Length: 181
Image (cartoon, rainbow, N blue to C red; front, side, top):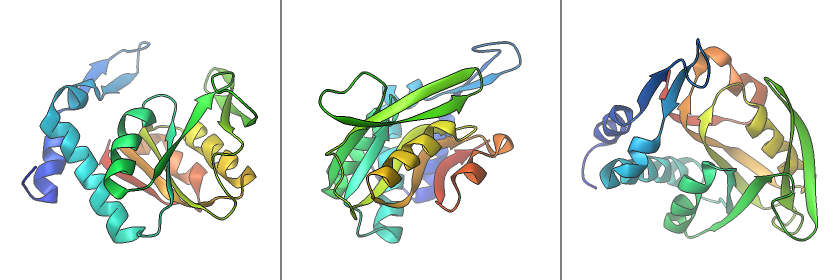
């Protein structure tokens, strides 16, 4: 896709659709489905992530995608970069020996897990997801990477909800977000 980084960012922003009062009253949901529906917008997302990673993290070994929307962007980015892609899933979804962490949600607790042989100690990783809100899920994924002794280079998200301060929870890891609200 041709165009400047700013033009790509504008294209991505135009394809994020707001839904007021979803999933409950008072929440403004930001939907990425229109990005996935439009090949140019999806290419723009991956182009922008690729540009960032090549400039800032040339030594990345693995892209770590979070269940489930990190699975949409992560493999495309990993393929572009010529690196591997691994999954962080909800508890009970992966075969073989796994490592897990429990984390807090706004409405309770959840568990995330990864196959224990997914990462070799010392490998460099970038985590990717569609949205950063309170930071709970990305924080749990970082904890999994720490358990496996990976070196976390940072986190990538399409959308960051700044008012919820999720990036603060992830410090010292940097967060690169395409669109902020």
